[in-house]
Length: 195
Image (cartoon, rainbow, N blue to C red; front, side, top):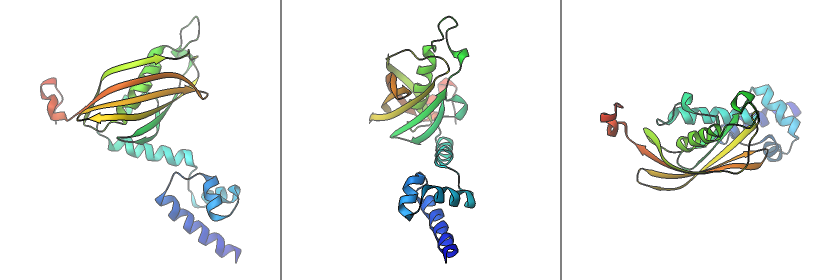
């Protein structure tokens, strides 16, 4: 009897994660009335990866579907992305990115991650940053991990305003408001970008 309950739970778990893949093990355990280790064993038995890997897979598929951003052009790894609304990226810096004497991260790395994320949340064939109002709130040491969160504040035609806030260990270190333009490739014929 317990074997049949487990098989049915696993079938329902697979269906539930197919519909809503970003549920945590804790949420799934509560839903099925079992322990978190039981859910982990069920996932392992069925070959379903943990939440972090599932969310990275969704982000990769989403990024590959957006035409304005190509993976090699991004700084930081996109963790989740809701095109037209919001997104998050993670950037693992290393010591080579800092100033030799102080070890402080060079500011253009913070800016590049935020700019990449701002462009990623905008939907368009060609996405370009037109204006940025940036504030560096505190120094970051090279080797730190930076989490950036973007939110679309408003859109007017092809003009998007995107707010990006970057954190290190939960503390805000950088904040920027980007004005990003989304255009069709055909509007760039004279600039060398064509269909």
